[in-house]
Length: 257
Image 1 (cartoon, rainbow, N blue to C red):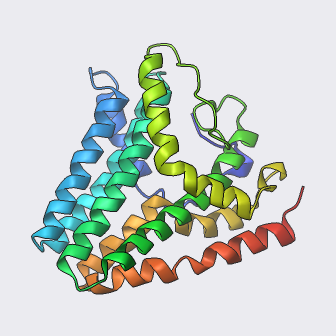
Image 2 (spheres, one colour; image 1 turned 135 degrees about the horizontal axis):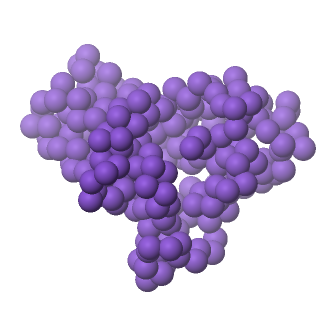
């Protein structure tokens, strides 16, 4: 099942791992592997990438970062194939993403001459970029498919557990999710509080926005690692954030309710 209606589908430059995700999920659909297991697997791949960076195996690090993106696409695909959507999986996936992003940048800081505070700023920037992408994308998903219940535009209230998952797990993971993402969500909502009123976003706009999707961010990091530009990763991620103002400005000027 697609996340979007046909008319709302766009070229998502951050979703290059979808093909591998579908391949892996089809292999696992008749096994005892659950979407949570797949989420844990992409976490392992991300940690291997961190280890490789710390030991200056940059090509291997790039490989495991891209593998992480492919596996990351498989947990949601497997949940749809097995018809086992869960809030636990949705929140755990996002929690793993933010911690892996931090550890990747921490490892890059460790092996370069960049400032620790610049690394923290780069982490803040990459999360703010991803939050803008997710904000507009979830708005589009909610308007395209009425049955999309695990991703909401405003994540302020603990959701009721879906069949097959524990309410306690959902509650704990939601609290962690709101702690690590809440600040970024509030900043983006404050910058564009009326975006959710828009009926839809043009496909070309969403494609440009996908430059801020996590998959594309990780692709940039992987390419820079591979071609020996590791010292430029931190400053690039900071300057890359200038598009946030540009994209929000375009949305406000041309796409209104």
